[in-house]
Length: 192
Length: 230
Image (cartoon, rainbow over all chains, first blue to last red):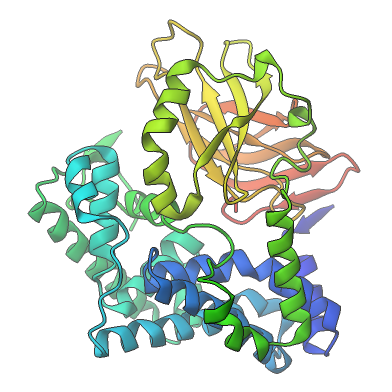
């Protein structure tokens, strides 16, 4: 017998959307790591805005669970709610020109220099400067592990847009790395 | 086979970086005064659930729950090599900035030694995350060891998966922890279906590090298919 990883969460979603309080508690506990980390990465880990947005996304899910029509798609629905919140916060921050606290202290990045940690810090710093639509696409595809089709479904866009966003994000990050003097890494060939 | 990528950044490297900065599974709070107004409008059920979760952390939530091999009083066998303790002390502040808290070396528990001499240890972080350290035997031509951290294990996340190839002359090694009740793990590795046993809450596999279609085998005969190993 093969059991999918999500039967419990689907059952919780079905009961929660029907108004069962205990199921709603359980569903939030199950979804919390996924939602919190997704929102945090989109808004910018290391910032209070990201932590606040993550909490607000959980509240959005708690409030909106009664509107969930298909419990089988609860994760996609939760990611849709969470990314809408994350993008909203990210855009607000850009509009208000509020600078987030950097994920890593620039001096620390400098000290780390060309080490693996320095490279990682440089990628993250550049990532936080990408437009929100590029960040959210990369997070859903590469951190959450959604397919291009699933990412398009969550974001309400075409698969072509997903591909284009990821390409654009990677191109911008590559440029930022070059500007910091990082050499191209030799790595296994990958499907894109 | 390796090729020079057109970009100085692979999708895998970007994914690894995002994973490293994803932080703890729960949002950090600035203090009750800042967020209370928001929490107050949430349903009582949700608030209770999240507050209870927070209380569990504060009361010493055990990230080793469900890992019997790590459930023993501290003994001399649990001590990490001095070089790893020193390394951890050196990079703890960076780990903390990535949102993983700091590594609690005093919490280290030995869980398994492979015939090759490689040893595995569990460790907790200050934010209740679970870490797995692997240490190669002294004198090995490989790297000295490694460390990875993440959520504690649960029924919905029953295993961890990590891979490394410290020496290009030897095949990659994949390994991870498994919660009590998991007897074996199956996966497709380089196009071949493979099943490896779990011993003392640890599984290992030497071969292709490209593991897909991961399935967990439980001691009641049931199986559980994981998506992307998450």
